[in-house]
Image (cartoon, rainbow over the protein chains, first blue to last red):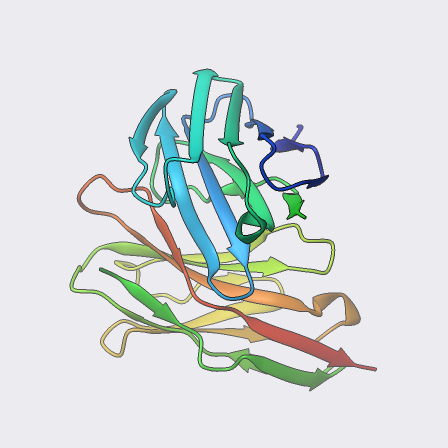
Length: 114
Length: 116
């Protein structure tokens, strides 16, 4: 079975540009999560969805960040405008509804804002 | 809010030896789940082992086992017969089983080096 698929794997762009990260969760999973990983702050949950509906976006750092899940098989995380401090690895994860089920992570997108 | 603490930023072990990684957490809840994830240099986050708080029996997955001490809020990971492929960052994570939240709270991680 295919795991969580993220694209692109690497993204390098200039400050001020719009960045869109993409995620395809594992088929059948009800939950989708976006995380950010930095050396300073570790792994932080940005937002998560249940059945395509955003449930908790309290981790989204500011209005420049937005996330959508238009259907069960696709989600985007957008940063507009991007800033150098947004440079990080962004992970998408998905899981089934039952709490004991673990979250399955994608390979992450390494984002560098110059 | 729950917190997870991994007090060992780095650990090393000789190949074939045993190593234990520490994790403590702070919660007022009685029902929750605990996980260990491995992140090798390839950057993937890979589930190593999981534990339900209401189960007293420690979880085991092949060479990986945990020592779950609920009263002490401790959840250490033991790796037996360490292999070079075990070299990675290891993250301990907590998830509540109450209140409807699906949030995973991660520790800062422990970098494990395996020496040949």
